[in-house]
Length: 349
Image (tube, rainbow, N blue to C red; front, side, top):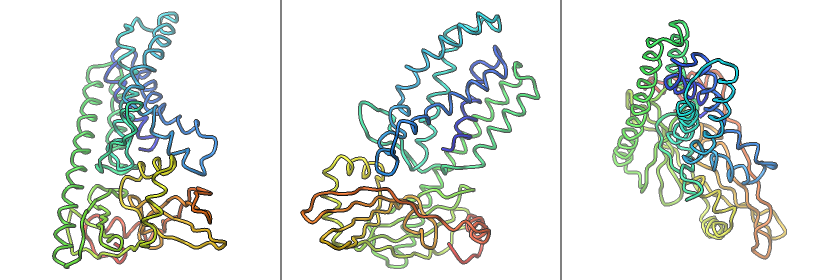
């Protein structure tokens, strides 16, 4: 999720744990704890290859990170508050505050389809579900309203704590609602593919921006994938677009998978790829793999980013580089996106 949402969630959890004792300071420290795990991006000196994906949402997003780092932060805060005479809050409550704020970060990331390494260093497996989008203004707003309301109600009061608790429960219910929309979108997509007699095997739905109802569905077929958009609010027949992959890409993907970089990227993507092969001359072949979990209509239908792998003349792996593609974010596109969420007529989705 975006840093603002992570921070707001951390602030809400921090207030529920320690708002009665330290008031607005619990929100501020919880906000810091909610954002802190994303500092892992500074572990990467060169983000042109796969190093970014090796470290981001890795050890700092593990469920073990909060209990370990939280102990040190709790000791520091407990000492400062007692020294300054601001509060006699127990060390145990300080520990719970920091652990709760830190651990909500990876848990929130895990309800997006990017996935998170929750059990690092025990396993590099990514865990994730497509419940809400990486940027979801509704989820963030629910928590922000609760925090602002609590401040006006008096941050140290039991009423403020009840308000923030209600916001946390409501936002969690919203996550569950989003997950149900994703499951429903996959059922609708399968039925629509069968109705249109379109051959397919696996069907996966992914979130889109703004509202919870529009889902991007990717279905695997013999030559590549079908991509279509489903409104669970008001389902309509889906306009499926075929995204083809090159048959000669499969052996190159299998070869790339044997490398450390291949293990990192394919473990990250963990889903459909558009794979093409480009002959660069001098016997070099370039394998381009678009991550199809994220994508818009038009030129970015197959994804917003991917990985380029150059195979040398002798078959060895040469240059590896990330690439990205800019989506169409014009007002007409965004208006069509909002209408598509509600199943209203539009031309793009």
